Image 1 (cartoon, rainbow, N blue to C red):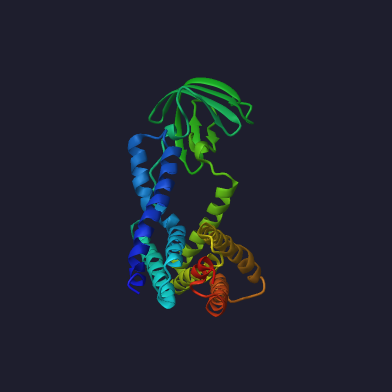
Image 2: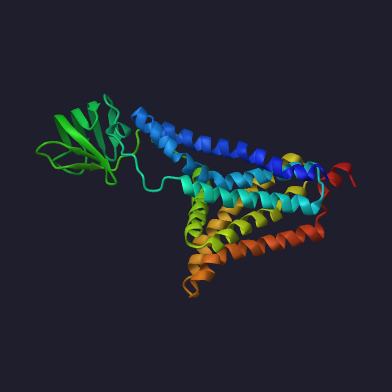
Length: 324
């Protein structure tokens, strides 16, 4: 019983490690992608992004922490009730208060302007869209020795000019050369391709962004919907821990836990972008549409919870090892 009451402290310890790891990797990729930027601006951008980065990985960090905690419970099962309710309370508190605190301190509208060095490396041929851009030197917004090759505009498809200026904004990168049309390029940071995601990671990030977008929307528009969504997500995930006790092989149980977590992200996106959007065509109640993904997820969690309680012994893994 004493070990069961240690679960909240273990949860917080695991959570701090996991969220530092995930947010650190996110910031590292951001730093590397904008490495060509002015160092002073880059440091300001990274510091400004810290709350946003932590908020981005908060849901996946909470669920990953639950997987680690559930594996510990699997090895040392104590009170079945407390082993369910304590992680539920801890995860729910971290999710709710985490969103509240991070939304208070994150920078929503403040944008640090980019410099041309973010998109062009001086002394190198830079591939931008369907054009090759060479700039000999960059001093602030001033460019020297500009060479542009290619492009659909016949007046700008091969041009050399000794001087020009560059502007950055929502339109992208604009190169301004005297007596020439403004050249607007949809440029990406020069090192961003190094940190491009593969198909598997892209799928995970797409599902995570959908979940974060939904949680942020509910947090801003409906606190009741936000609380319900957090509870449904965590309760159903904990109920799915039954899959971590169906095998006597610990590594397989951990793998199943991670697969369940991955499946929950996809399920949530399917409910939000698939089922809810289709239901909007036949249901007129906006409140029902807003709560629909959470209600379905909660019903799924209740079903798994009943299956766990009625048919799966809490110490099943221990019995498998003992051969009982």
